[in-house]
Length: 588
Image (cartoon, rainbow, N blue to C red; front, side, top):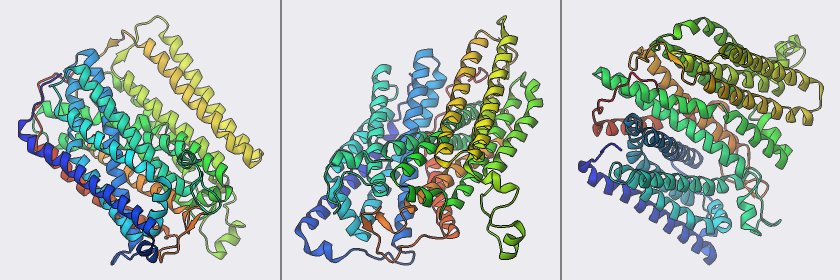
């Protein structure tokens, strides 16, 4: 591995390790004190809520919680793909991958301190502003707090050992430390998810709300769907932030070597983000299905009631994500010699993305005046109304995913020419697989209009499996077809227009805004319940905020988050090292 010794950072390491630990011990002490107060009676029972000045308790907790989740997502995701990239470098002996993995990991040193500080602040605010709720959750999950604190401590140990031990440990030892770091991070996610999912779909308690079975409280209806959904989303979000850092350093670079390195870094980060984004809707379907299985009322509130228009906003955001991701791939093809032969397909891919985007963002019911509703014959548009139901939207999303996959396939083939004798047959087989998948997905979407709701919901499963199987089979064919392929020309890393880097910024910001939106949906669907059907919200904020108000809070949170991220980028840039001189002409 490359020698990445940074002796000037010793004091920063102590500060970075000590600050999270200090906050963590304070948070643990506060939890224990609150639990003791509950057992003692008197003081805690007298106060159920406290008011936060100016913005109110709910908004204050909302902003801090969302900031903590965003930083937590980044800190827990980056080690996952950094470890994979480091392993690739170890197996291939290519120092570029080792350097890239280290570059990603450098972003964590300051980010971890931000995450721990925000987590401690969130803990303080929750216990101070919502003592009744937190005392109840402490009664249910008190025994999970100790392993959570222990795991957080271990994460700090493994994280700083992984970062500051780069080039000092044996490669296998260093990889094992990275693996331990990721396992601990996953454990932290799983424990924290148990707390928040219990509030939506409580289990393991009796009619009075007392704990009966801790494992059932943890393993509630949506615990595992949230775990999987969050892991995938974290990887996607972390990749987008890492790509944004690459874009920032690319635009600030002064030499061709630096531009080449950070162009490659931005590409890898974006590839990770989009690769994780593709299966994310499928995890969302599973989560939605489990919510309906627990309570149809909760499911209707989520998808067909108060929050239905939020999913239209979500469609617009994710549609823009796919559009920006494809745009970045299309612009990236300009640096690949030989890729110009695929330019003619871009207009068809753009048409497919645009059409799917429009279908996905079409609402089922329109906000209309009385006169407009009468002219349409109701709240549903006579023509476009049919595109507002889930049959159409699921179909559009699946085709959108296939289209994005085709864009990446063309990018991957850019400077390669197959040498196998069955290349033409392989292309025809791939085309036939794509054609069958599109026709079958559309057929299931149309069929959904003629069956009852419970059957229609299940039709999303074969659609998902068809798309996943298509991508797997086509990828396998492509790998064998382009093995020992003839290289038509090099990839000219660093020769990218500035607008391509702005697309990476756009993707990162859109990811963050989408995370904020869906966090609001997940918490807000309980409406006037702290714990659904168990503990009512009797605070002054026991009402559902309007879409406009929620959008403003989310926007402010995202602005604060990226202000912090800008500071992290700046601090990370101060300690950056010059490129080791590796040649970036080779393909990634």
